[in-house]
Length: 374
Ligand SMILES: Cc1cc2nc3c(=O)[nH]c(=O)nc-3n(C[C@H](O)[C@H](O)[C@H](O)COP(=O)(O)OP(=O)(O)OC[C@H]3O[C@@H](n4cnc5c(N)ncnc54)[C@H](O)[C@@H]3O)c2cc1C
Image 1 (cartoon, protein in one colour):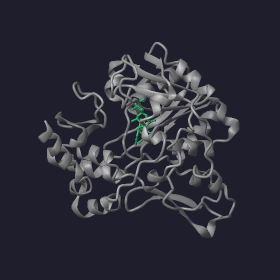
Image 2: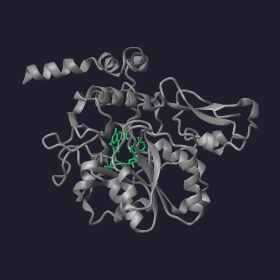
Image 3: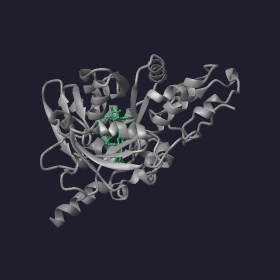
Image 4: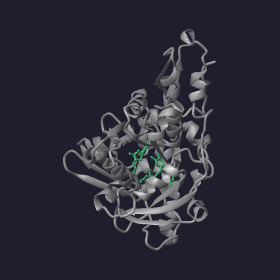
């Protein structure tokens, strides 16, 4: 039987990669999320798609230790989402002769998985991109090829993507494969980020050259700060939900349907390491809110990777329970808001901004109450 496609499908594409009959292709839904399409006439009922599907094959372990980290490299810190753990881990991995596969963003083509074997290629992988990046079959195939050639490979993606890589790469090749999953509340589709960028670019009369989802801005530590840099040299910065894309993400009205039922939103982790934001206030005075990575170490390989962070910034052990308590996707999936049902439809009819205003109607009221309070 071919893999069942329902709302729980994460769009990882593992089924299409392993299908020996090549009867599965990935295509976009009306909301812009990728789903498998099966040519049932060519299906040979081998069930390999079923076994590779992350929903059927979760291999996870509980964290054995937990650390907090903040890089001492100011350039890295200004571009990354939290404390720069990813870039520092990736840099030390490359220095030791390995290659790194992570997510790059392109204002025209959208996000894509890309491979970095040197520091300059690594730059475009720095920084979190808060929308779904499709894991294409070429990326998974290239990981297999690099491992077969004796290379050490570090892959960093969402937990469903990490499990997809595990489901496709044979165990015999996995000794040199190092997996990092990010804590993930869920992903909006490319359609929504494209609509937001098109609108911003039209308003400014210039294309967007760079979109930082989590710029660091003095006085706004611990808040999402959006920074758009335009081709004409202008740039604009918006704090928190004042930015419409950040608002839609924070109110979780545009996430993939499967994210609201995510089986990976738990303390059972699929990567050797898990990276996320450290939001627990007052846990350790050495760290600044918004600039601190939470690192869960889930395997011996993970332990070795974290050891390489010594000397690259502030690295401290933390109690697992204290550091993870308030991080929702480590305990359960985020709740599906009622307005999720209309977000993409409203966007199609009225445009991105109107869809955000309709679906996140609570925000202006909250802001008004906060102003009155002040
Ligand atoms: C959609 C999304 C939701 C998140 N939700 C939470 C949350 O609820 N709680 C929490 O603690 N942390 C969350 N995170 C993780 C957090 O925001 C940071 O991504 C993480 O801490 C890594 O930050 P960093 O500073 O170490 O590295 P960064 O330099 O910011 O990380 C860059 C690397 O992260 C990976 N990555 C970035 N964007 C994507 C993407 N769209 N798809 C797959 N992989 C990607 C890539 O490998 C990329 O190269 C989320 C991240 C994303 C992308």
